[in-house]
Image (cartoon, rainbow, N blue to C red; front, side, top):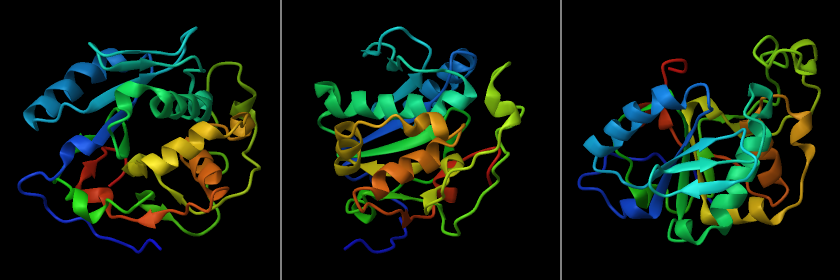
Length: 224
């Protein structure tokens, strides 16, 4: 049984090569985010990271650029579809088979303190957890692509406890492999709420979010 854990400062890094950092981006922002994130990871001596970008005809990974191009919508309302197929590719690609955990971050985020891997090694799904089952059902309105029905349509789906994507969250190999194994197309019903969508999928396998205070480890300009 999982228990709540509070990561502590890591010095020196422990088993850092078991963790893949995943930066979720899009074609309209990857040029701005790429150099900043690459430099940041170099300064932290972290080589295990990739970028996710949608809007491509075929899903493929370029090991030289560290960009995973996904055959899924790259629009705001396409976030659930994009993250689903990105995780499916990561699970099945032998290049990523060595990783035991995956930390998903947005492309505007920065790294804060280091995380001790030993404190999160038993966590299947963790981050800043939203435990009350409600949210802003209209947050996506006006943010979606021009002509999208979601600009005038509220999210009407059910809520489960989920890790708030804006703070970053961690998934285990078990969680990633479960996502890869299921055949699901309900992402079309989730507007831009990819973090809630992932939590819903994991709940089907009784994988529930564990509270991990990521706020000092991953810094977002929009979520403090």
